[in-house]
Length: 501
Image 1 (cartoon, rainbow, N blue to C red):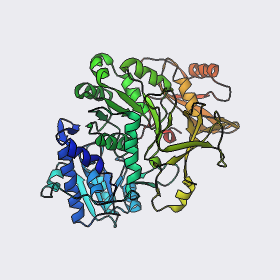
Image 2: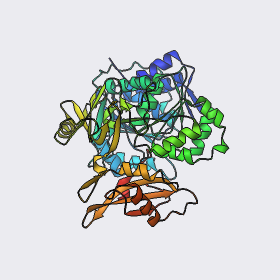
Image 3: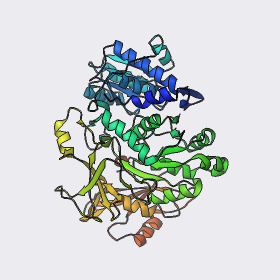
Image 4: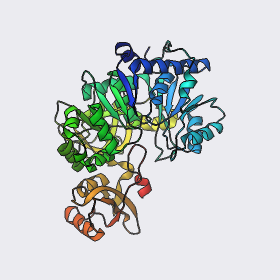
């Protein structure tokens, strides 16, 4: 037997009185979270839901998310987390495609009518039988159900979680992650992040996403950590919580670190923050070296980058503590995982040359739910083809060059936006940049930079184009610059380049 719910159960047995969750003044102990998850499991079991079934969950970072998440797992079913920004049509697609028998949906509020969208999506999905609204009455829903439950004996190869890909290259697909995938990834996080007697995580990464789910929820609960939930990232609020709760562990995407750099440190007790913060982790997108250096200068912590995908549970590489951390590198493979770089024919390329990253190990998904052809295309001879282009140095450190789909072909030359972004970020007037390819009648594509200027900066397009021309090869530098006050972003903080295009 192996069940991902053991991440919660073991800590509830050994540390029942420790705070497991903290949010908006509410504090729940491990014993309380486990008891509530058992009530969810009893609720589901009474409706005939168990091993082999799927149950959907759409919620922001509130206590109901981990309670329902582990309750579904205890019942033997697989969790299908949904992005909270999905609309009713998309929700109906995900419910139908995953075969979900039940749907737990956060009520939402002004600006996020998730409850309405979720109900409409549920009503349009005949196969989904039960709808549970996560609002103030959620505790009433659980009242009367026993607080004990014997977790269903699932097997290591059973599906524990189905994570849907973003769908940027087609119809969203559900990556089936097994109990073994998820448990081993959480325990591997302990190896690479290290543990202390009592870690305090600030969790502002959405728990419906693989990054926050494995690195903080599952890994954190397995270590008996306290998770301070922040439903929506705000730099000031994040720093206030770090100061007040004694946060030791922060994980974020680059735009979150960009926000922390832009905050006024004079408003906070930096000694208190830096005195407890032991590790900062970045993933989800490439972290500009300039931001990494600024975070280290202000907050005294050296961000360590890692890399992974939903299909790899997600962690595949990391800049391991105790080893040299190379700025701009995603590090080396984690325990039990192998990486290689291949060309379009699948042949491995040597160090220093760019190739597609392929991954093999305990973290690779079972496959795409109900899509054997897509699975066979993505996993060949046991190696998962990521679609990401990278290089490897002679020390075995990997570097992301770019997403294959983001690469720009200008006049027959390959241009990698990430390389240009790193350079442009060093301009003293630039706060954030995103480089994309736009159609061009003779060159095929032209290089365009979207830029957010630093406060009070007066940088103009001709000035930046001229500066780039002096600092980049002739075929690389952007000929077009557009200034923005903000960028469109996903709920996880990634810049939506497809919208910029």
